[in-house]
Amino acid sequence: MRADMIPLAFRDPVHDSQSAFRRLLRALSRPGTPVSLPGPAEAPEPMGGPLAAIALTLADADCPIWLDPALSTERVRRYLHFHTNAPQLADPRAAAIALIGDAGWLPGLNGFHPGDAPYPDRSTTLILQLPALTGGSTVRLSGPGIETTTSLAPLGLPNWFWPAWHENAARYPLGVDIFLTDDRAVVGLPRSTNVEVP
Amino acid sequence: MGIDLAFDDHGVYSFAYLDEMTKRMIRRAILKAVAVPGYQVPFGSREMPLPPGWGTGGLQVTASLLGREDMLKVIDQGADDTTNAISIRRFFARVAGVATTERTGEATVIQTRHRIPERALTEDQIIVFQQPQPEPLRRFIPHEVVARKLHAFAQYGVMYVRLYEDISRLGHVAMSSDYPVIVNGRYLASPSPIPKFDNPKLHRSRALALFGAGRERRIHAIPPFTDVKSLDFVDHPFTVQHFESCCSLCGAQDSYLDEILLDDGGRRAFVCSDTAYCAEQRGERTKS
Image 1: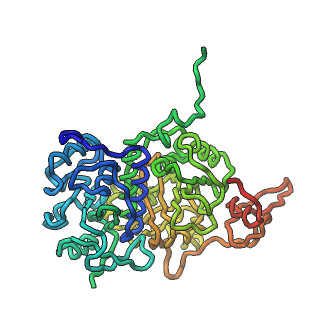
Image 2 (image 1 turned 30 degrees about the horizontal axis):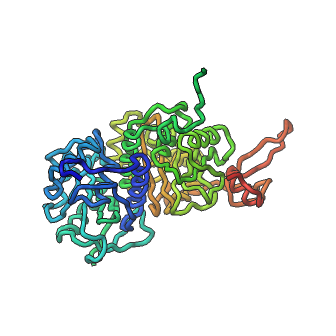
Image 3 (image 1 turned 120 degrees about the vertical axis):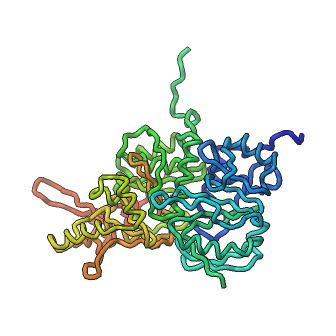
């Protein structure tokens, strides 16, 4: 492959994005439970397959995105521009979707839009790529979509993350929603999910 | 040489009728609706080949969900064999080529008008409601901006006043369908015009419930295992309809019944509104 060529996206855009959407819907309606999410045919480093699949499934000209410094490479920008035509913004608060390749860059969750009281849907959705969705320290989740409680142990979240998530859940119905991804799967974390750090 | 007008080939339509950009917009709205249970997410409702009021909201939600592997069931007032149910089922069989069924147990997506099947839904199923009016406050608050503020402040006193007025005048709450609920302890929502008999099925249901209102351009959702509380007072607790009779076809005593007039003399019978459930009780083979 030539270095200046744009890598391929979904082989079958209609059905691959439908399948990815149903997996996202399953992940968000069953928070904390990993759902496998196959990536597109190709995605430029450092985008993992699931993160790329989410961007291709949800972003378009009506859905502005923001890229963190880890993902903000020329190849990633050209790939997303060509395949989704989503405006790429410099201000994370103005973005509908924030793609984050390295959680270590983030100062916190306050830089994103939590929605407005009459329109809580006008919030930013974060796609946060991690080294792995297991193997980290365990937290306990509860809320809509979870029968009793469920545990989650993603690897590579910064120390401020769970206290910040606690604050995010406390201002429900405002707040951001997050999809955590690794190289194979996605975990949904809607703002309605409460976390208990043991 | 004639022009081939064979429209029965679903290849002439976009998969599931809607274009990809519309589906993406609806999919983003559905995800927001799941994240904020009971909140009505505005969406850009499209013109569908069906008049508003016939399920265009449910149709658009279903079109955005459906994939080639899905098994679709459509019911109208519980019945698989009424005009609306048959047309919608045929529509998706034509434009998406999906398999359809009348058996509740084997469907992956169930689009419904005004009923929830009697058979308990599973976590692998999604139920899509056709909803004429998603705003429970609309009867008292015609002004959208004001209704939205009341939702923002969770000020639902006006609905309790409505319930109270019924009780003071009639001794009970006179709403037998579209009975308002509080979802996840926060948003007042309308469960669509299902009989209040079905309200308890929404509480901590194993299946995801999506509500699509085409004319009103709103989508809302009740995720699985979400608390759904029908509004009531401590001294006037919520109750569901109770039937004196049983189904005259299958004998079921636990299902929602429709009253059927048999002759001019006023003879009447009760039958299950959920036709698939009734057939199952009778051990009949239903169409797959």
